[in-house]
Each structure stands twice: as structure tokens, then as C-alpha cells.
Length: 256
Length: 267
Image (tube, rainbow over all chains, first blue to last red):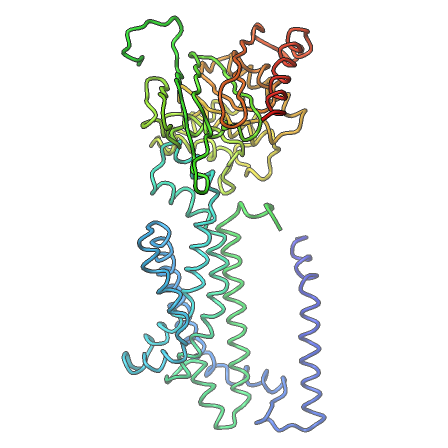
């Protein structure tokens, strides 16, 4: 319970700033009589969220699905890749440069090509999400596995441990906090990836809704989509943080 | 078990090292770390090596553990030659190296797990010793919540549970404060004289610690490390802290210290 109140106190300043900004926005729009299609007031956006809930919910589910599937692919693939890189020197030399190089190709260039190759539907968006979010997973996990104290390797060797058991008992658990840092970054960019995928070509999803609503001057729908997207990002991010606390109980109380 | 030389020895030599030399690459040339080291330890003995920092003590232990190979000389530990030592000698390093993600009980059974013993059996075996190692009641605690002394005792238990005949200790008390160190030394002595009939090779730079714990102390010179002096510790067992104030103890201690300091000054 004390934790709960501490949480409230910790978040109060940020919350107050957001509230003041929303108020300033509302009042500003009202004073300068800004038309809705240019900048709708927060109240109109809020009303849209309520009024068009069914429409928004349908598109939200599509985007959420893309994010989650793409993210899960990125995590499993990224983790596998990181393990290969750490377990074999040859794999490191062969794969790591490619992993890094893959990030220098702008995702916005690849996305339309995926459309050409695979077509519309879920697959190209999932691939964009996976492409954009696997990188932080790989890099962080590799770093984590390599951060093992060399004395621990010596200890394990004198205990007669094989390379595999060193990986399973030492490298894997050591990399966990690093993996979770990677996941937090990955989940945040996943949402961006899904929107990019939808912008390039789609018939549903919040990214599609934004693209469609803008030329129709339904600006409040664009903003409602933004609100949902950032809420989605925050909720997913928080889920990762909670998952980390559950999965790594030994980190609690170890350091702040 | 013994070498086939045919020579019969009274006590079983569990650790036998003859003419051990080792040089390591240092930039362009080789740096002699150990030179013609002779050393032995009988079954059940505690033998220490004292020397200034950088005298090759760690290299010595690494070779005994099988982590490093000698350039020349023979190393024989309970009948095993230097090539096959890795995984057959218990090695406790300076740091406790407890795994932060495992609780105390899971930490101490690490060696048993690697030997392929089922976790359940290993836990049961470890539980028997928690009391003697002052860890009972803390089985489920994570290492970060333990005191330095407790962490060190857990590291001891992890090493001892691997059930080797020979254990290497690299400055096992150096991370502790003086008071903790003294009480842990006393505890270890009691433990070893009690039911663990283990052969211990310990490296330290603390002369008093070496004399208090050991049956024999080897004094090593600065690089290249050679054995300068071998001192038998005549003090009867079981020992307690009081012996460090006896004239005999003080004399031997100051003799070794002057040796170490004398060597250090014109090195």
C-alpha cells in the first residue's frame, strides 16, 4: 500500500503538467477560435473517442495484433540470433555485421517493397514491426551475455562445466536484465513500426484510419488515433516492466 | 592413486609439484612468473603460500586448478597430471562469485548441478551443512541481502560440496573486515579439523593468517616467484586465536615478515 502511494506521489508532477497542457490547449483553441479541422480541442477528441468507439476499437485491435505478433517474432528471433552470436565466434563474425547493417536500411524504404512482394494484409506490417524491433533485442542480449564476469567463467571451468552449461546457467540469466532493457525499447518502436506499415498500404488499423481521416478533415479522428496509439505504447511498456519484476524477483532490492 | 615411482612415502602426498616454471607473454618478450617451484601437501594438510603481490601466486593456483599449464616441471594432484586437472580440483577465488539470481541454497549446489546430480538430491545434501556453515534460515535469501561473512561462507560451502580431495583458496578472507576475518578463520579451522579431511592449498599475503591456519607455509619471492623459505607451523591443533600472541608465533611471524620485506626492498 505504501508503494501505491509512493507511485501516486512520483507520478503527480508529470500528471499535473499533462493536465495543464490539456487545459491550455482547450482554452487556446477556444480563445483564438481555431477551427476543428485544423486543431480540435481536447474535449472534441475526448468526445470522438467516446462517440466513434466502435470504429476506433476495430482499428485498434488490428494494430495491436500487428504489434504483438511482430514483437513476439522479433523477441524470439532476436534472442536466438543473440545466442548464436555469443555461442560461436564464427557466427559472430558472420552475423553481427549483417545485423548492424540491416539497421542502416531505412524501414520506410523497405515497407513499400514488402507491399509489392507480399501484398496487403497482416504479414507485411508484422514484418515491419519485427524488423524495427529485433535490433534492440539482439544488441542488448549480446551485450548482456558478454558482460559475464570472467572469474565466473573460471569458476565454472574448475567445476567442470561445459560450454552449454555455462551458457544455460550463467550467460542466459546474466543477460536477462539486459534483454528486458531491449524489450522496453523494442515495444516502444513496435508501435511506430505498425503505423509505418499501415501508412504504406493497408485497409485497416489506426495508421490507416489516420491516413484516411486527414484528407476528409476529420482531424479529431486523427488525434483520437494518436491518443490510442500512445496509450497502447504506454500500456505495453508498463506490461514489460511488470513482467520484468515478476520474472526477475532477485533484482528487487538489489539496486535502485 | 600414487605415482608409480615405487618410492614409498609415509604420508600420502596429495599435491606434488616439482620444478614448476611458467612464463607469460608480456608485449614482445616473455615474463618469468614462476621459476623452479617445489611444493607439496599431504592429505588433510593446510598449506599456505605467502608472498608480495605480483609474485605469481595466482598463476600458481591457476596451474593447480588446471586453468593454466606449466612450461616445465611436473604437477600431480591426487594422481592427476596438469593436463587433466581442470574440473578435478576445487577452486575458491577471491570474490565470492555468488549468482545474484539464485538464492543461497541454489547457489551452493551449483557445482553439484554441473556434476549432474539432480537438484532435489543436491538440495538435500546441501541442507545438511547449512547449520555448520551458519546459513540455516537463509536458504531462500538472495546473496545481496547477506553480510560479507555469510557470502564467503556460502562460497566455501559451494566449493566444499563439489567433494574434491584438494581445494585451492585464493585469499579467501581478503574481502572481509578484520573482525569478520578473525572469526571466519577460527570457524574454518574448526570445520576442517572436524569432519572435512580435505587438503587445502591457500594463497594469501597475510602472514598471520597463513601461520594461524596452516601446517606449513611457503614464502615466495617477488617475480619470478620462487620458494624462498619453507616454515613448518609447530602449533598444536586444535588452535585458537590466543596462539597469535605466543612468543613462538610472533618470532616465526616476524622472521617471515622480515624475509618478505627484505626481499621486497632489493627487488
